Structure formats: structure tokens, C-alpha cells
Length: 257
Ligand SMILES: [Zn+2]
Image 1 (cartoon, protein in one colour):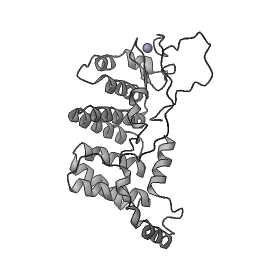
Image 2: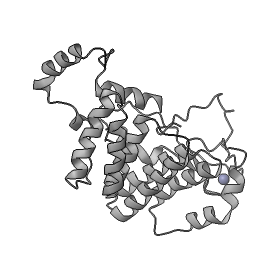
Image 3: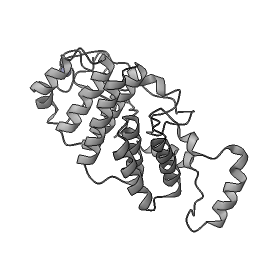
Image 4: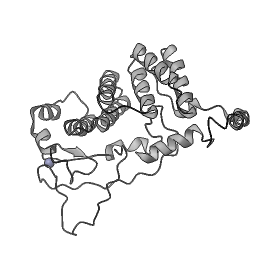
């Protein structure tokens, strides 16, 4: 699942063709989106840094006819049309208490959940929470982070990197006990060094009841101490054979999505 979608078509459309919704067939003009790579460090939940951070309004297309939302609405899972026509999706579209951009991410999350892509649905729910963060809607952000956690946990087993994001979502939703227990369990599983650094930071933030936004740069040692860390890393080569920094790992994770 790509959270920062490329909308490059697989083949160029005919010059006079208006892109059509794969669910209902409504034609609409949708601006293509090709993001610049992030330059700033991501948040602990891997929300990208700027300049990508501010482009969420362009990550998904949404059909003006039926409300179907996706990175590319000219494509849809065979079961998407049924999900879009059903009462829960129509109710979501009519929910005027939700910010329209958040509703777009929730629409995509709903289709993903209904078609069995639970981890991707979690990602889209988390993105709705980011929209709520930006609009100063903490109660909605909390609700959608907890939805994301429930979806992550109802899907296939999570790897260490994904579990870090669960911990961060729980912390930012002020689910302190769950966050602390999940961080402790992950710490006991001997995760990779970069993950262990982030988990240690999460545990400190949870203990301090800090529900705020922090970037992965906070989990790195200050530059003046890097030579010392490099020395430790050489000494501990067997545990960290590639000597890969946390940021390098996170950049790689981001590149995968
Ligand atoms: Zn449509």
C-alpha cells in the first residue's frame, strides 16, 4: 500500500478521454500528483516531512458522482462498487461533522477494509487522523487513530516497524496503558537497533504522558555525539552489521510504501 500514491497511468489515455470512475463511470478531471521526496524527517508514525507533508489534499482522487476515493479512481477492486453503494459508505459521505478531506481518506479506508486490505485500511484511517491534527480536531484524530490500531491488529501479524506505528498511534490517542504494554512487549522481542531506539523514545514519552508530535530525528543522538555512536556501532558490529542509521532505515521504509 502506497501512502503517497503516484497516479501515473500505466498507459497514456486517449487525448480526448476524460478519466472515468471505475465504480460508477462518472467522468471527472483529476490532477495528477507526483510528490517530491520528503526532505525533513518523518514523524514517529512515519507521516512524511515537508514538502510532502502539506500535500495531503492531492494524495487521493475522489469521484464527484459516487464518492469513491482512491489514489487512482479509474481502478477499483471488484468488490468496491458494492461497498460504495452500501449504507455505511453512504452514511459516511453524509457525515457533515467530518472535515471533507478526512472523509475522503475514510472513504478509501472503508473500501480497503471491505475488500480485506486491513493494514492498508489502517494506514488510510491514520491519514484521516493527520488531517484532523492539521485542522485542530483532537477528538476526531483520537477516534481515527484508535480505528487504525484496531484495523492493524485485526490484520496479519505486524512486524516490528509496523508495531512502532501502533505504539505511536496509541500514545497520541492517550491510550497510555496499551501504549506502554505494547512498547514493553516490542522491546522484549529484541527488535533491530533502529526500532529499539524509537521504542525507547516512545516509552519515555508515554511515561511523561506526552501525546504530542515528535519526529524520528528526536530518536537520534545529537550530531556532536555521533562519533561516539559510530564507535559503539563498530564495537557492536555483530548486532548491527550494516551500521544503518535510523533515518536511513526510515527513509527505506518510506520508499517501500
Ligand atoms: Zn464514481
